[in-house]
Image (cartoon, rainbow, N blue to C red; front, side, top):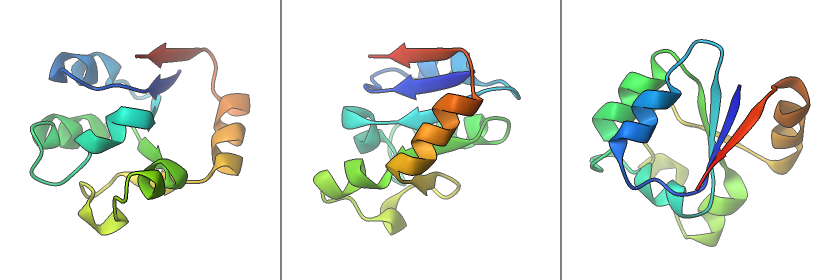
Length: 96
């Protein structure tokens, strides 16, 4: 399942997404939660042990966030890679 996360305000959502057959992509305001030493760091690290996590390069650039400030293990992708994910991963669930 492909999870598209646009807003992240609670760690309980991250716990719900953890699954070996899931993929998580962070967009929009959720990218601000991906910094090292954020409130979400420990839960995100736990999530990434089982579930790959991605963020769009363009969303980082729009917010002036540098890749090196992200929690280690989060993978940066472009729109082409996102399109491939949407083709290969079904169903798709959006989290706002």
